[in-house]
Image (tube, rainbow, N blue to C red; front, side, top):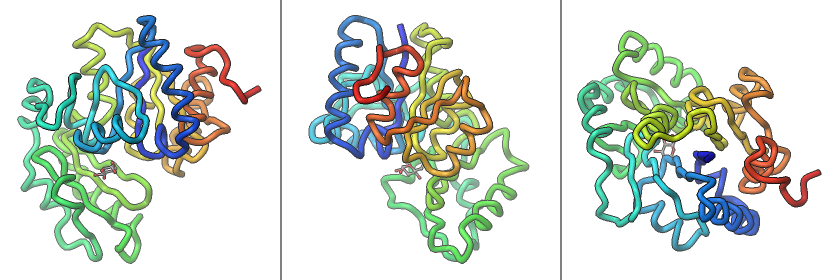
Length: 256
Ligand code: GLC
């Protein structure tokens, strides 16, 4: 059985017709017991549930929310609790106050809305800083002596997250793979921005959709074409193309 761990925004979502086609193929594979689907996102759970109802997202076997700091299993309900074992493990290494201290005094920094700031995720926007890249580098420098407990995730030249060192999308998927006895050699990750990079580094196959941001394109170049496939098509069509490339699907329509 294959595992597809896919980001949502800018990866599955962006072209509804392409997503409908991909979702039908995913449903067939899941129905045949050939695919385990993990939605791996920066969204919070309520937004994933909305997406299942309104945006055509395929039904998953597990959902990682808030950039791998929360893991949920179906049935998904607004009041569902994340897997406590994962949460408690991360709580043991993370102090939100300390994470906030790394952001002090950065000119132009704006905190993200409260719903994206949790006990395990400290998130801000840097696109209002005079030089966002310089601000991100300064925060990384401050976190560097504490990499045993914290990590910085920088995405889309705008979003900066400070997460527990043991979390992130890649490590959260690894946890699920071990918990459920999934085949780690048959995990395919799909994404478009910096917070997806951890999945590409953690597993052997990554799909970057054609609309991927520069920070993920750099990861694709670094890993090389055996491990990271840059699709020619954007959004869900790119995921479908990548799944065909890695032999999970037999040839995507419209791609020669
Ligand atoms: C999503 C999350 C946001 C995070 C970003 C990058 O957009 O909502 O909090 O900063 O992903 O990881």
